[in-house]
Image 1 (cartoon, rainbow, N blue to C red):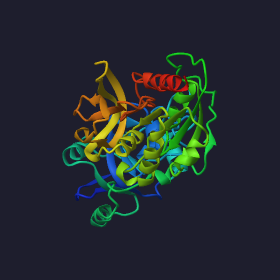
Image 2 (image 1 turned 30 degrees about the horizontal axis):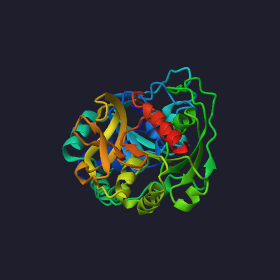
Image 3 (image 1 turned 135 degrees about the horizontal axis):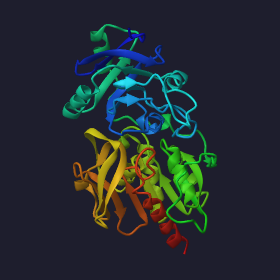
Image 4 (image 1 turned 90 degrees about the vertical axis):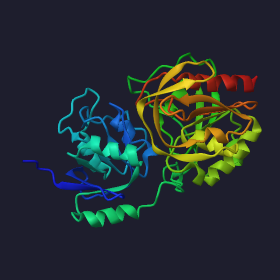
Length: 379
């Protein structure tokens, strides 16, 4: 007999799924229900601030098999509101693991639901689009849960960056005790002073920048252009993060000021979208987004195909690109825009995640491209 309590997943369209609760059962999860197709990396996904406000459905059937370790957190805590899995493994086995997924979810007050047909759920989300939902092990009235789901704020129009950014500027200090840190494509011969704006930055982005010789000052999402320029940076980095990019008006205004200075600028994911908005392009919400670790992207400048890690629900409308922006990468699954550069300024960005974590390393060259731009800028 299954010892875990019954739990319910209710969607705003009226569909409900009955399963078993795990993790922190006194909590409930409310948010946008999305799905990720990666086979591994549940720890990195759950701790990625870009997933704030979202309930994650893992399409891989077994989650928790290799436990949780101290090194693979992308932030200080789990950021997903809750998770949906076919089966959460009761045991774990890995030489780096220090605790179970169950234990970590209890520590971070995160609830999950297992024992439901995740294939059926993902089919609904693909056909109808991601939607608001709720996980509860405390309420059995499905009508009440559906009604609550329908009143959760829509992701469109939400600026979630302020809830995940740092509270004050700080200097990034790398942790060197993990044996699996990836080496850069080339050994840096100099150091670069980089200002990274934290809209929900992943730790592996900071690791990759540091591995290429960057000394990084991380600024809150609310930092002004004057505060950022005060450190006289050699480069500016715009991070990933959650929510609707068009709602982050403060970020768009700051970026608009910064790019006028001609400082090399590199954006990833939300940073890419904000950069496009700052130059006059438009963004829109995708039906079910791109979330996984094997998405093919074509580099339009080299014709090379990169297998990429992706995590986003919004995209830049390629038809809205102003004449001074050039499309550099295209998602081959649906031809959405995956990268841009400015035709005159040293500014570029990508929609996907070259730092991976989890995912392949095909696109790590973009960090080298950033430092090469700074070399030219510094003369």
